[in-house]
Length: 234
Length: 289
Image 1 (tube, rainbow over the protein chains, first blue to last red):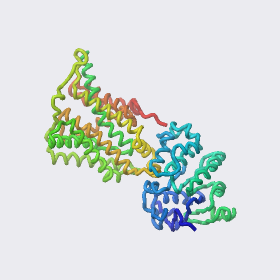
Image 2: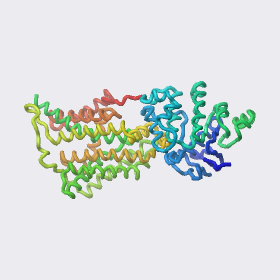
Image 3: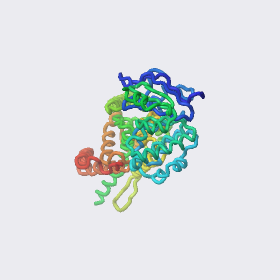
Image 4: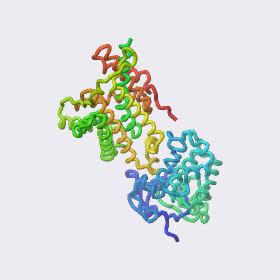
């Protein structure tokens, strides 16, 4: 077993007095694709907020490439190589498509991704590079959000609900690009409510239920019954 | 007829100064939704910093900008990182209260240190030099320089905002702070840079204010009001609109003063209120979307 890229060790996270995560542990190896599934409010987004540094766990530790990052602020974590595709895309509305990508790339980490490579992967973004971000369609905005995160050349990419609010055919197109992205050796955490997509894309699956890991295992080894039990808690 | 042409030209030229008061104010509000009540007092502080530099080094006021601008920018960065960043959040009230307090502290600090005496910076012969454009219409050299500097400042801010990486960071942070952090922007530093830039503009405005007329520690709040009025008249979020806003305010005041010397400031307020009543989005609001 190689040294994990990301190790989360029993973290508790709170919003004020409300506890959102209870002793969550998770590891990701370099190049591994992991899916985190769970119902609304299970703590998936909170977990991503803790990894990306927007929130700090009250208990437990997070280490990335052997370095503790649990108390670090978000911009410092990006520089170490974790990038996030936020839920709902959240492109910068007053910036053009290309300016959005450049903001993603301003941490100046070296690596395979640059504007030219991005435009090769998503040609439609090249056509619309000078348009304001809000003029893109939902699917194009999702591509731009993924591209913006890739511009920082992350070693670990966090994707929060990339299928949310998109037509199934668009979701399929976007997921079809994931192997290209992973081919560069990046690790990937996919947070999804769309279990079918998540199981197809990931090697390992964690299921969160009410802030706890209810189930985890190789994607192929989990039965539908086990997943629905962990998902719904019945 | 030439009388009114002269009056309007004076108004336009002073409008450049008002636009500089306003530019720093609207920049800060645009980037971090902070209404800086101490803005006017910081302009006066810049005038006193210039006074010390001019007296200390024996240089003329316009040259003193080479020192005053970086000094004020440093003060701005330190102020943001050391104080104002801690007041920012969902609530608009804490920064308002803290900058209000800051305004009082600056006024009283200046009063303690420099007394209530009126001061003025002396720019030498260019203060009184004028030239005749057409028969009977005169333009002062100093007001003209001031206006050209104001246009250069507005143009410079426009370029910085839309053509540089720093400007991109300002706009991204203004759009969405938490996503800006997720993209690797240290928003505390970005805010510090915005305040440094705002105070750099304040420094230029403060020096021209101090050369143009007498100043003392108490005149800050009125400069803040002129700045606010220029921003609102021009429309929030547009730098060129801010310049037009300053000019409209300057011309209104000049016409008011010509009708009756007591009406100068009043005329500006009346035009401001009229704009607020009939076109509250300002003359050149930012096009959204």
